[in-house]
View 1 (cartoon, rainbow, N blue to C red):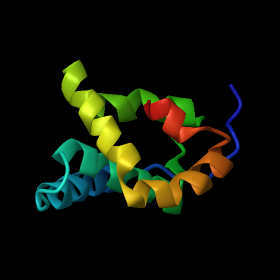
View 2 (view 1 turned 60 degrees about the vertical axis):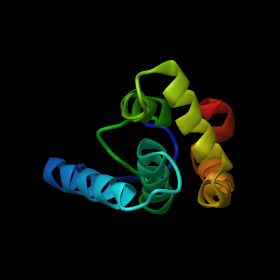
View 3 (view 1 turned 90 degrees about the horizontal axis):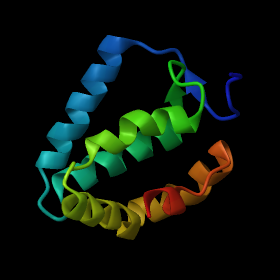
Length: 110
């Protein structure tokens, strides 16, 4: 499968783990929205700025790892996804994500 258009950078497992750890630490320091929603917003902000690691070939491949980071309980994950979509930071990066990856990220999260 050919790599999709979009921004990619060389994958480094230790850097990826460190970024994930820092996102979760930062998400836990706030109490405005669900922690997992905050962590996902921070992750999408990173993707918007840096792109995806090249271990993913498409944005859809990334989603296979992205969605399990929400709660596995349907009611909770629905609330978390709504919190992401309602957040101004997410709304600010939506146009860039959509253009870069040729997606509709709001529809994907709905």
